[in-house]
Image 1 (cartoon, rainbow, N blue to C red):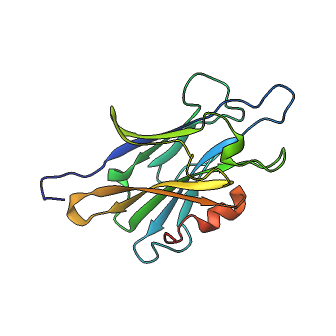
Image 2 (cartoon, one colour):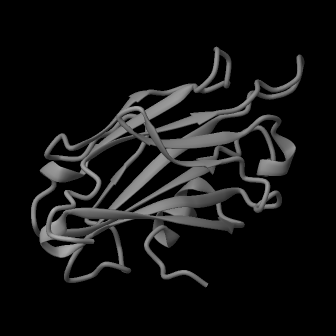
Length: 176
């Protein structure tokens, strides 16, 4: 990046999926974001943002949560104000986890899954989880602080055979 490039500032991550068939347990997918410090960018997250929570400083907020996938288009939405994150934070990883309360579900079991990462009206990333059909959870994108130029984003599609609780601990691990 050049000194004139501001990098990525404020992004929205949205998630969509089709509801479960009639009579089947609901499909509940969740956006999860882990924020990592420059001292430990691949360790435990300094904080984790998911349904029912937000970052302590208010820079990352889940403002739309669905437990069923019912609705038109994207059912969940999370806003990340990267340009407002404190300088001690160097990395943010965003992923999606499938709740397993109704029995084992993978991305391949759920119709029409998709995630979109946007800055303003520009799509930075659109992904359908087709490359991780057997996963219970998956990372989608990572944002890294790029010195004075702000934040850069990198697609990070990696599937895990991990429940939402286990996925939270794996979120920051380096790519395989």
